[in-house]
Image (cartoon, rainbow, N blue to C red; front, top):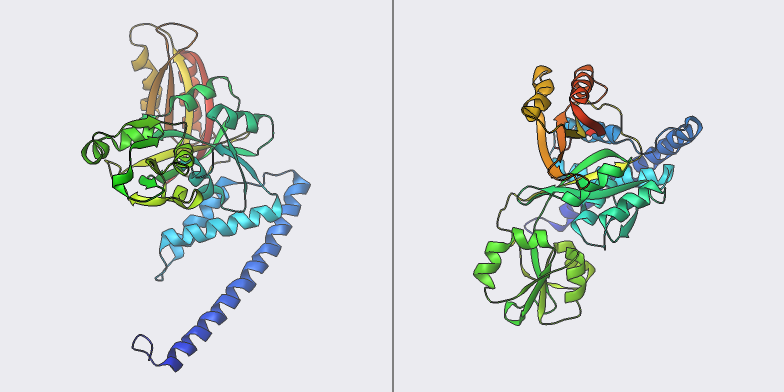
Length: 361
């Protein structure tokens, strides 16, 4: 008996599982052959190898058709890797991300492109843009906002002078872990992390490590690297970082707000076609006059467009004048979206469409 079942019954069930696994393997290789043929046709027609709208269709169809016990989130994760491996057969993708390894941007890149993509860590957000602009990477992944700490201003500022487009967005649930060499709270004399995670764990730190200095680093991964060489310090980072840098978990999920998400943008040279559930992002500057903000929003109300986000940033070249960044529902190819943006252009100093892309759920 094993777990209350006869050994013979378990052996028979395992044989059936092996048969299913063999069938899955055969189907994966059949899929690979079809993917290679698609890649050949794309090469002939100079089509895009990475098509976010097609990926979204696959995920939504599979989860809609899932009537069994397998969780939808697991189906998405598995097919993300299948699609990643398939893309590598068509055309290996190079993805620049805000590094080093084990940053949350690295995790967002893995979620979007899988382990088969060539993920390239770079030092800063500006470097991600540069890698893509110079063609050293096909796409880049950058953080844009956190649900508790707000916008990442450096990313917004980069769009002012860049011609890159937003290709996709990635939503990542953020769980912060306190990591150290020893795994013991009593050994901690200093804590390192990026300013945003520090802010997101402020109350927990004040309550549990009230007299311990907290030092800012360029990223959570840099903090983990530093702690890997110091037995008296700890890092606030991802659980993934613990495995990469051989650290132990002192405490799990120390973020103050359990509903903690960060939104990342995938940037490239061309926005995808309409998926049916899209966002369009624009950047614009308004004239400094009474009623300008009201007139700016009026075209979207008139065309019944839902605005998902609006942010303002000071213009670096002119004092007391502001740039606005706006996310709206819909695709630039849809007439009501295009008409609203055209009307906006008539009352602004300038308008720049940053991209239309599938909306992340």
